[in-house]
Length: 505
Image 1 (cartoon, one colour):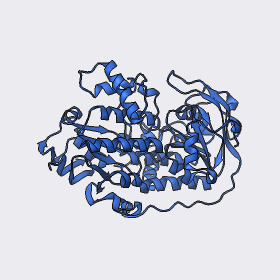
Image 2: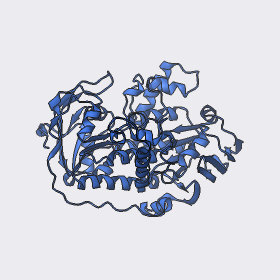
Image 3: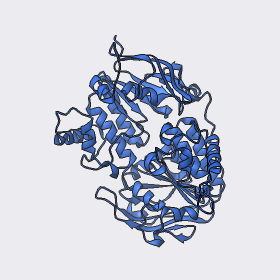
């Protein structure tokens, strides 16, 4: 049988690093093939080479038995190669339909594309409104757009880079059904994920990368999570150590918060109440697009239209305060979208430090270059961020390494209240374990931590209490020991019952 994809000696150099070093890999028609490796192992670079977004320095690509030079993503799509990026390649001011239209043949009208989106969304359970502008979507909804756009090209090879990182377990199951259907029809799939149980369930073959080289090939179904971890990072992730801790004073209080959405596609927040004490981790679960984005903007101060008393930090009414004023009393926030709200892509890591760390400036407001450089270098070392140093641009880091830098920058500030959305999105198992351990360390030091995540396993692992968000409302608080995955899944539909009209905090 002719191979769908045959890579021979693919090599790509960047300044100070070899991203891909003589990589060879074969993929059969209809095969779901995993590419596994820790952050910075070279996975995303290799996928971009196959998709024509990056040119290799050496090596050959054979597609359907023919040697090809993939000159651009458009050329790749014409060949039958589509890709779902981890960092979304979407125009934020365009609508869903306009973004999808750009990636399809010009023979379709915009109305026809909108109809195709609705049809595909209903078929695969990835509901999305074609008329919505991208900037009004949460990251989970943006991921749906990327997946639908790729599926509409009817690819022969589909590349998926962390496609389930912000999908709920129910949505993941639907996506797996879709992928199995299209692979049965002959489409080959290259699947990148740090979720080892997904790879074992979905993929028939696996190529493991470490430091830009192939270090192993295996059949995931015959491996355990532990053995895959050893192949990927050379060891098993350290087990999280949880300690019983009595919560202290109430540090974050949200009381009867109601807020109209800033735009017509947003979600209104309705009578939200929650509390987070010092020395505890509280989680918010829910399907993307149910008000999490609006709540985070209100809590961070990006949206300061709230009544002052509706949000209290350290017993101070801050509902109408901006982000900087809230940071000055100890509130630090990591938003869900890395590029845009957390860092400026074109700026260096040391310059990005200044965005939320005013102590890097002198009392007179002058930049202290040496202190700034040293502080950034310390963050990179402590959180094992792979980069070319403090001078490296934020956009040069892999997704997982950028996430580690952002988390490290904010956790290192010794926050009194720490709010984070999607803390381990796109992060490998070893780094995810490190980030979760650091969150628990913040808790032990007395910080009040609020985690918004669509990964239920993550919330069950690190949280003391849980809320569920649906349609702009919050469920009652429930202790982690009393919560079940199925129960939380039901609550994600807003079905927590009239008997829980008041929320315990």
